[in-house]
Image (cartoon, rainbow, N blue to C red):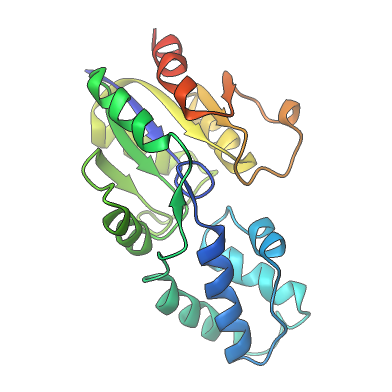
Amino acid sequence: MSRAVIFDLDGTLVDSAPDIHAAANRVMRRHRLAPFTLEEARSFVGHGAAVFIERCLVARGVVDRPGLKARALGDFLEIYESAVNLTRPYPGAVAALETLAAQGLRLGLCTNKPEGPARALLRHLGLEAPFEVLIGGDSLPVRKPDPAPLRAAIAGLGAARVVYVGDSEVDAETSRRAEVPFALFTEGYRKSPLEALPHAASFDEFSALPDIALRLLE
């Protein structure tokens, strides 16, 4: 049985908020609703596309309009599949992935981003190769913080020892429920104070992650 590091995607490996923001505002314009600021859109991220759109509609006071949520979600997913041009890896993230792989660790992704857009983003960034498993927000009937997606990624990797790397309250709770050590990236989309999130280690620069991962896997 191998050792593995499994990552969240948005707010952890990549800053995708600019693309999500742009996609959301295209949907808002389509339905004649006021646009959001980048910070507003970032604050809605974390629980998958359906919850993101619901939060957008709640913020505009229109969530109860008949049929609007389904139409807006469909519009968003159509746009989201190709919303990749503004997304960038966080500084040092790609080098950290290369170092972890060179250390003999297997790599996986467990994200609430739908699987199709997640794979499209990885292709665009040239980051498909390192990841042997990708579990998206629509890969299973449940999504994070339910532990099932993370457990599915672990099973897919055949890993006996695992570290999960994420940036948010959702990721911390997923790790806790799955009983997996959690490494918290502090520069992502977290809304709570650092001390409010249970974690085994934290880092603000990806150059620190390989040593953290090896320590937590011992």
